[in-house]
Amino acid sequence: GNSVTQMEGPVTLSEEAFLTINCTYTATGYPSLFWYVQYPGEGLQLLLKATKADDKGSNKGFEATYRKETTSFHLEKGSVQVSDSAVYFCALGGYQKVTFGIGTKLQVIP
Amino acid sequence: EADIYQTPRYLVIGTGKKITLECSQTMGHDKMYWYQQDPGMELHLIHYSYGVNSTEKGDLSSESTVSRIRTEHFPLTLESARPSHTSQYLCASSDPTARTDTQYFGPGTRLTVL
Image 1 (tube, each protein chain N blue to C red):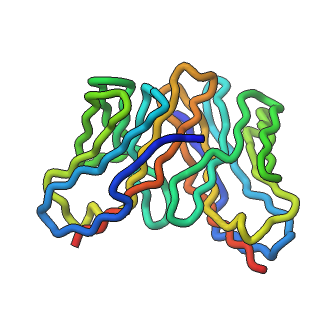
Image 2: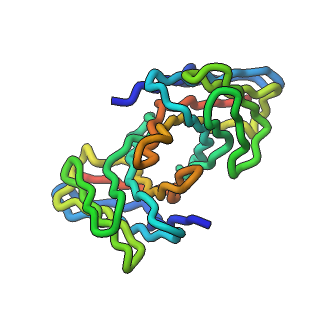
């Protein structure tokens, strides 16, 4: 079946540091890949997505590239801000449902 | 902008009470979902629906039940709440005709059972 492996947190960074959150997946076929973000006290919001190999999703300075050869979809941002503090979920779209990773908590300190 | 609503946002209730968590969406999506979220953040799918009169159990066994009488409405009911039901409950919907199965989430209901 489908599965998503996401690095465990928490991740603590200083403001303006470079961010990488690793995500790898196992799936049959050619699933869509997603990153969702959850701010404190809120539901999840779609951050970015990619639908096929070599696609790059981007939004709000975040990027992730769909790498079929390494079955990865790592999230990156060049310079994080305090307002980026949240929980980030990698997800894989399947036939009937979406499979979510465990979530990585990011804390950015001034 | 996603239009999916959950009420109440917070609920504190005693053991043995019956509760219903409301979820509504105005996007006309056929697919809807309920997730239970651990304090440690992990999401567990407990129910989903393909459309009106369709309900399915998710990956995590739950004592809750759901109904889908109208496309826009997907309430979750606990007949007799227990402290083990204390959790965050997230409702989501998606458009199965879209190329990607993007899910849109409500703000969640934080349930505490005393």
